[in-house]
Image 1 (cartoon, rainbow, N blue to C red):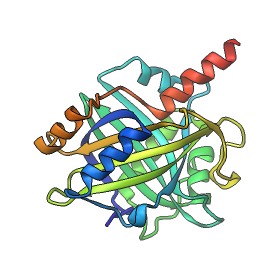
Image 2 (image 1 turned 30 degrees about the horizontal axis):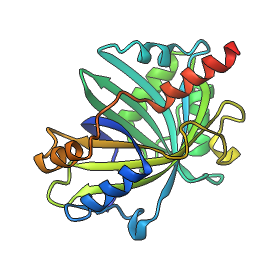
Image 3 (image 1 turned 90 degrees about the vertical axis):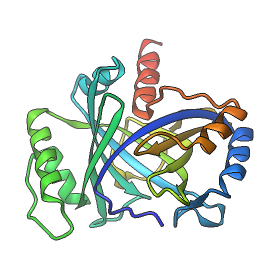
Length: 242
């Protein structure tokens, strides 16, 4: 069962772009070795909504696209459209030499907004991770960040039956917008990928199991470099030039 309260992740993440035919083949192959998380049972999907923060000149995403050894992002995440007073997650996502470190702190929506927009440190509550909160507070004070883009998608996810460190996610219907960039403004936006394309991510603390490598090879699934925010930013630049 997925635990959305997990606050620290360290793992390798490998990404693949696949079509619907390949998606269906892979899901059938995975059923014997993996189990759906609690939100993906009965072939269901759940919606993840994000607001990505950046500087006025998009310094964070421009640095990320230059493929440096180290990069970081700050985003606000909710599962579905949050209501007033709902719990959301502020996350720092860092990548160094291929290893992804994600640290997150649960906050109420208004607390997260005040922290990032107004640099107001929230009153500590039991549901907050103080260490991660301090890291986020340092970051938002070091950089003048603002909400830049909304990105949401529908996800189906699996955990390894014999390896709880192994997680595979399939994201579809990725949509983005640069207006009304707030989680509570609703879930809508322009499509980022064609309707037949899926983003598959394999997340693991170590090397991929041999059975998974074999399945990917047999179905000619090749890894790719893909960032939702990065791809959105590239589309944004193209539209600005037109």
